[in-house]
Length: 221
Image 1: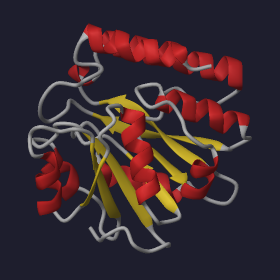
Image 2 (image 1 turned 45 degrees about the vertical axis):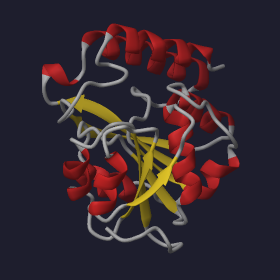
Image 3 (image 1 turned 120 degrees about the vertical axis):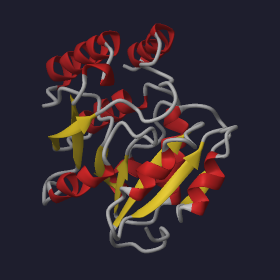
């Protein structure tokens, strides 16, 4: 990992809240040459210290919410390409180069389609919610997607041009809708989805969390 201070290359933005247990494994798997920004979204477990000790740049976003953390990381990056993935160990950063490779001429964003490697990786209620949202995206906006872009690789300047997006769990959905309205070309690429390595998911780890996320999703128009 190297600091995010050059225009060329890829910066991996990792929004985190209380991911000190999982983060070392995630950072160790970042491909060589990729820069990393960990966005600490109000952690109380030393997440920021863990990230710094592993060589990642750290920025703080005090406003709670996934979207707020992601947007802070995007603004802090300076490379032409940014990637976003969770810091819970559920996705393999080693798969990022395959997504970056598909970001060729005429492609604005490559989104990961999660393929669970274990039944426990994706609880039924979370998978059902994702299925319904993705179906809506295909039907209403013509997007060729079957997932809500949990891992994504995108051209930074095009992303910034979309302006502010949903500050909480509705961010990935609003991103896809805004991309469709802006005429972006999206490509979907399969990624491995596995149980998080530490802790419990703030979204799919409980029915309450899933309902809260679904409420955010359905508030996006």
